[in-house]
Image (cartoon, rainbow, N blue to C red; front, side, top):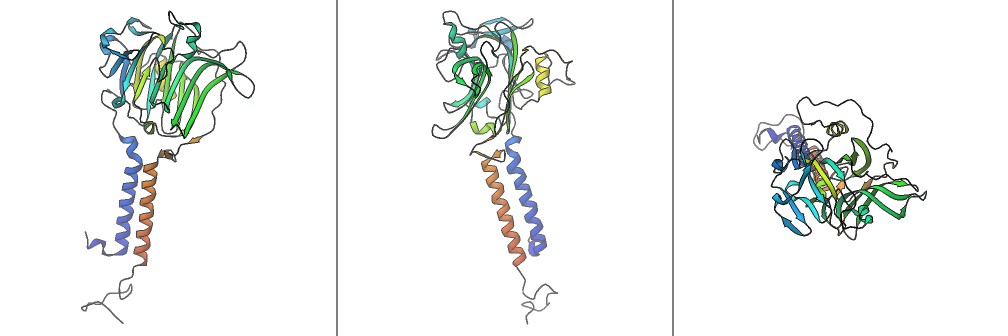
Length: 353
């Protein structure tokens, strides 16, 4: 081995091979990790049937953790059952060990029932389908119908419909994005009450996408890896705030360890398991929500925790290795054995003038 490395050409070849190998490992490692514990075939069911309820799901009423057997189940979309959240502090939660993924999909069916018993009618505008979060500065949250006449676009249209917020950073340096359809007077883009609708959120290293009933609704290009959020909690039916919790039925809700494409989301919306062998797209159907989304994708935001769509540490490591390779190449090219590049002397001590 060391005899092989004595020549500059062979040393250079070894440097190239080693650098390429380390670069591949450094840049591909974030995507190579296996799904967290509890996933089967890249999926973990959160709300499907009582017998499918995993021990990784936790049930809360207010701040009190309750036994899973106290979850209320009602008739679901089909012949099965769905989790019933009554809007009085009930939430399902998934914790840290099941959320450490670079890409993910959250998808399931919601039957939103509006204001809960004993709550004022305005409470429906503060309910949330789910929130994925680490702390008060790092989160993604989706609301079925937010309404705030003080939030307007450049044309004076107000926030009145489906809303998704995305926050990343610290209290001093935060990147905050809002997704919402500006609505004129008398027009709303909210999720209708007392109907089943399919909701899916996908995230990867470059995009956050929201699908409603199999159709792309919001999309944001971001140079950000979800693992940088270091998610601690997925809250179904609420969030980190003291807002009213969700009054809805939740059925066939799961988290997946990869970001589904639009065809796979369309299969879920049609009741087809995209992970099943031979799964294929169904025939097109009319959208459940007749009004199309109006918001166009907004500008790219770069977070200091990423570069070029990769975690910063991978980019810095790759850059350092490239610099090291350049330095070694320069050293090898500059090195000249005594006696020049011609035939070496066979005498002791090598050639000399």
